[in-house]
Length: 540
Ligand code: TEU
Ligand code: CA
Image (cartoon, rainbow, N blue to C red):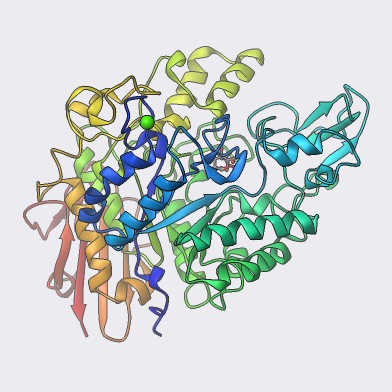
């Protein structure tokens, strides 16, 4: 079955967290002009589109995920002209720009919310989620993601408003058709500017029902999404990806239905939530279960085949660095970073590379004062109040803080890694003197070159887009291996997930397939060395 009818089925997307990518004016914060300066680097990597984390006007309570004007650029990042220039400069290099739409909530400084707070009769009041009440007695005990109650008291109105994230991120009321229409018009306006697609922040939470304690997967969710898609995305040739922490394969088939009624695909997080204790928070650490990881990928690859589409990712701006998580960020950093890349980029779906992943950037261990993320800072305070030991809290922060992903991009080994000439808004990872782009772009054995090869292979071999997935050695405790097969070719990926040498279980026939990419220079057919990975192909 040919699934190549949509451009994004052969695409690789690169995520940029603008404040940490490249500063162009010395204020220590990355910006749009900085991204323009680095487009040649991205062209060299070969990616097809950039997903930009939010750059709209925002008080930056949650680094831009709190938008106060959806139709303007935050002065910290530049202005609308810069954005148009970025879209045009990227287009020259065949790179599309994907914007981040934060539609579950706005900033409390958005004009709509400022109006909404004025009176219960104000036309914008119903754009948000309000409940009458008595001060000190919130409607229920729901908690916000970044700590505290999900309800905030507004004395002038004698009402509470609902916020799933910080108090400065009031939830929008999707039940209101006028609000929905305003959102669609805003999206059409961006489409008109030549945007190539959208990533939809926590989209599975828009249909909340706070009276029923429902946050994700509310009853009207897919109805809202279909209307949104019909009124906007379906009028263009866009890539759309919804962020859906609550998605299972059944729901993902709705979200990514090939009929185009919802999105192109969703980000699901089953493979990401493995190192936390069941039913607890992400900070409550648990060992990584390898067999479970295999089972999850297998299920998603098989269940969506032919009736949905996967997104493939290890990292984003909310997650720790993958090489520090499933890989080895010490002795085998290079081998394990490439192994994780080869494993993921052989699967069916659209791969996403998060800035610095292609260099093997690692987690950090800062003193607490050097963390900037609202989620990390609030959790630290809450857990201290609850009596947790400082040492235990810091252990969770080292493993899971979102700031692991947010340290500045490591361009070279000069001061501040070439990210800024000023004082960076957040500390750099001190390992930039060793791990940086300058030392990797021209080295054929670098992690960067491995990613570049993988991006190229996806363009060259249709089996990567359309081949059927089959897991091999499902119960093996060290090896992750699978095949992909279409009418003309067969692809084989085999990875040693651990730091010890093991016998290579491939048959003679399998070893005679053509090696497309590996992470050791020479081939040793009898063993798999620490973190060794190989991708083979044969024609039928
Ligand atoms: O993240 C969704 C979300 O649920 C996060 O709070 C997630 O649980 C957490 O980051 C894991 O550590 C999206 C954005 O990606 C995130 O950056 C925003 O802070 C959040 O929505 C609110 O807009
Ligand atoms: Ca700047």
